[in-house]
Image (cartoon, rainbow, N blue to C red; front, side, top):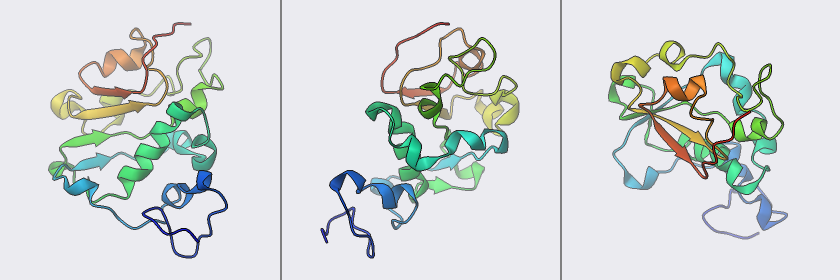
Amino acid sequence: PERDAWHTPGWVMLSSGFRYVPQLLGLQGKHSCYGSDLRIFLYAIPKLSHMTRPVLTCSQKMSQCTASVHIHRWLEQGSCITTDADQADLFFLPVYEACYNETACGFGNNTERCFPEEFDPRVDLAYFARRRGADHFFLFGCNLLPFRDQFMIQTRNSIMVTVESYQSEN
């Protein structure tokens, strides 16, 4: 079998297209986050747990849209992750919105939004209020939500990471 940085003992790679699967499933060893001293706290919010599943299906969507899956799973295995919020430099809420946005998972007439209507980062994210969200980042693999969306208004001080930023409206 091929041996390189992606190889996991015991896994025979059928195609180079599947080389990332052990990492997505958490079967790779820990990495050093490129030696960074940065500390990131990962939220796990029960009412949003549906938005980080299914990992393999979501990792197969349109190329740039899968960034949220791959970056989350990579971070999750890094030494830069902390479970102590007081040590965190940044806070990250992993959601695979692109996986659901393609199927218009919106609520009611709002087909752009995959977060539940009752989700409010100011209430649901325990450490959001400390710095009004300025130390929180959100990753959007496809498009940001429209700027007039309630989530975008509530997180206006936060870091928005996106691959592209076409502001579609309903």
